[in-house]
Length: 229
Image (cartoon, rainbow, N blue to C red; front, side):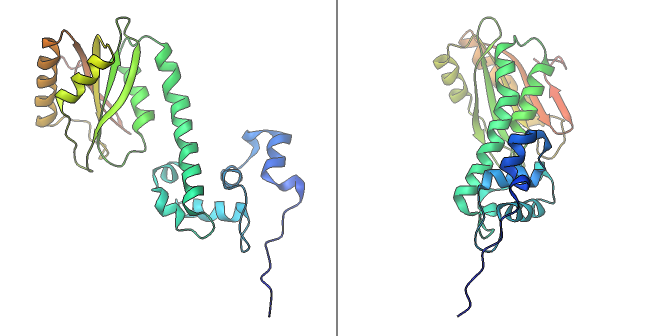
């Protein structure tokens, strides 16, 4: 019986981990960085070969890979659910590192501050989601939370849930937001009606609604900048 041969290992100097320690992360290709997350291959293919197949599935585009469902990744023989979860966790850490801490340390003073934060946080969402930024008296963010998720064409936000969480967070003001996966930044009639309802309900609790921001890959739309709040 012919024994199954394992994939030969590359020379030490060509292995991603050794290259990282010698030259730094910046010198590694996308394939090599993914191979490090995968850690090892299987009997048929090495970790870099599995990483290359995964990138090919995403058309060699990291943005497409970040948007891929982990179950789709796990269908590649040799990756599975555990490794797919590791890859998704790495992307999420990258988003949080880039979007979260700087804004939380900075006073929110204009709509572009919020837009930058949201575009990073929501850029890989394929469905529409509705989120709320809960701010303290100094206009610093106490908490950010996605309060509802919908389909490709819309989502529904409940003012009662939003304001209940505002009280729990001791928020003095709120900024609501949602994404438009289609890329169209123009607010719908439903967006305008919800904004007005939220503003009026928040006033009853002495909570200021500062803005409603819509984001997409093309840019952002601020209700406050347009004089609609």
